[in-house]
Length: 395
Image (cartoon, rainbow, N blue to C red; front, side, top):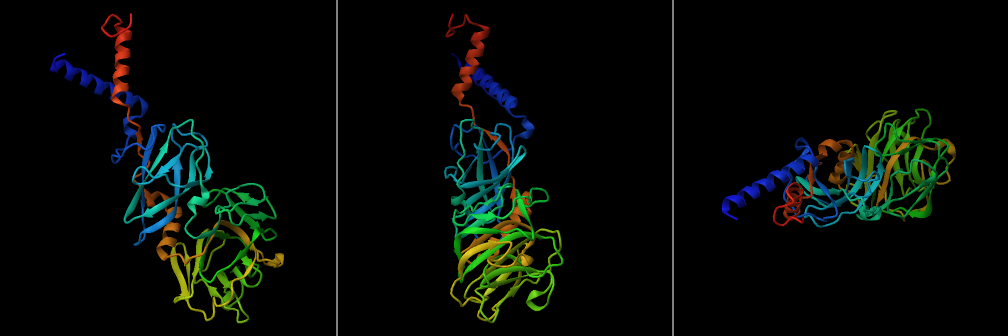
């Protein structure tokens, strides 16, 4: 075969390959992504996702929130999705909190969320794949408990760390409209949830959650607590540490009744992300609202007592009467054994609240390349079908 014939054949092959790709995916849907070896040939598609770091420090083992749209080729239950790190080979732990026909809401452990951004790969398109979720692997960075309120039905309240599952006293007020991430529970003042195992509070830590208050009448509504020694409460009436529409936090409380209080006044029927961090240094504690530092200070002997240990109660405090239970919605309630940094809390809030702008440049489809030998085989088969008399075609 002369050089001219070889060149013609190569051009025909390339044209044929282009036509195949055009049939698989419209050209308008293609987004070119960085070259990277294919992780696993059993997966037919991958997409590159770029996560923006909104802070000024690198975050290690950060649980990032991704809202993954359903793509043609995915399994209906998303069991074939996999997340691969920027290096193209490291498999990342993930947890699907919620999914429907249009999208999945997923938490993925990012080993290193660099500045200004980090890229991960989403793979899908394997009908034989089964779920590879590993919730405990997502929440390895000093999380004591993570309650997503993801169940949407029943009375069981799972803890993604596996440490402190809880039981709800009711099951009628699950909701998934006007939500934050997936389902949430709307406590009505008579219901609560209690952990199965005993919980021990520490002298260093973080508590964070999304909440939506719904009652303006009842004072000192307990959001979470252990007896009278460790509690977080929302106040609608009162003065001082019980200033209306603020959250006060008593931890390892003594007779001197040391409290910390948010500066923010919270509005009825509006979601807010709240975090409290504390340690033994200065500042002794910091409160955050919607990712921004809200208040701080060293309120005396705030955390000098021995840790409190008992059953932990959500939407109440252990042993407290029903008249002071929280009334409103709770979601994404987490407790850590470390004092989270301002950047950590800022990123946590931003990835949920600003998902479209924090996760950028992603979801560009790139199908697995067809090997050139396969293309040549298809070409030859098609040629033999039309011209069976030619050399190399079976008669």
